[in-house]
Length: 432
Image (cartoon, rainbow, N blue to C red; front, side, top):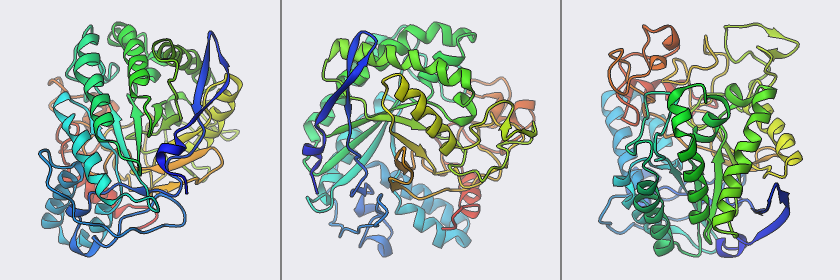
């Protein structure tokens, strides 16, 4: 089995407009173990951690050392333990969730120390025979989440220099200082940002953020393209870019962002794209309509024939291949276990009836590098109210027409939402 340092070698393929496109052509998930800090697992689970490849390799976990900043998974396990205390009936299922690798969101500058502490913890369990894949979400663009209100970031529009110097440069330096040969680092790049440029420039906040999004994503790609690192750019989901016009609209946006990165660092290498981040679209929808607002007509929903993430990634592989873009994908299945549960396909906030989906696995479909869990199950998508309050989006408010599919009683985005976690566990498909 090749080590991460060997696998990272890039190849140069045919050109994008105006520049060459180096692409990493190896799958970082194949044969690797998903990172879970072993010292923070339930006692019954410490002998092994979940594998991310179909053969389910196991590795013995050594006790992790203490870090100046606790590894992320310690926070997550503690949150799940709180839910177990509230509702002991979910104990067995919840303890399974604690053993599954999830991405670590670096959504503020204050969370940047998590990069070093988790890379150090991953190095404790990684071996040549059992390399570890660890996932971070790069998510702090100026004017972040321009088309919604629940996840607006800390850096205002125009703060691109802060983003570069105080976020990306620190991120890159931390990876360089803490990467180890048997640890593979996967980065999910800026969820929702480039899809918003492709489809939502009529929103004033998105129009104002456009320049910073391009410059920020290009800079992030250029600086984070490091040995031992694989990068997947977020491209929304089937219910966003699945329409044919939107499939085409994202192409020049991605080309501009990648070419901008290559102009800064000619060795920039993008592995592929991430879909369904923090969303509930199933990978295999079984031909069911994604929502109840419209009927299926000739197998399409409101003229969108990409009814699930398998259809979407397959379609995008074709579109991207025709335009010299990478054609590999990862899909977030952490909350995508149930189909046909929404009234509105665009509902994204704390969706009622959602369930944990397929477990992380490498090579689950021809176009896929992996199914992954990007958003940790149980983290809120946004506060349920009050309407008009800062950080409250209408899609999260059950009394708002847009929030018809949202659960009530939710805290602000990223905070632990016990009722959501219980729903996800109880509706898991396949069952936990």
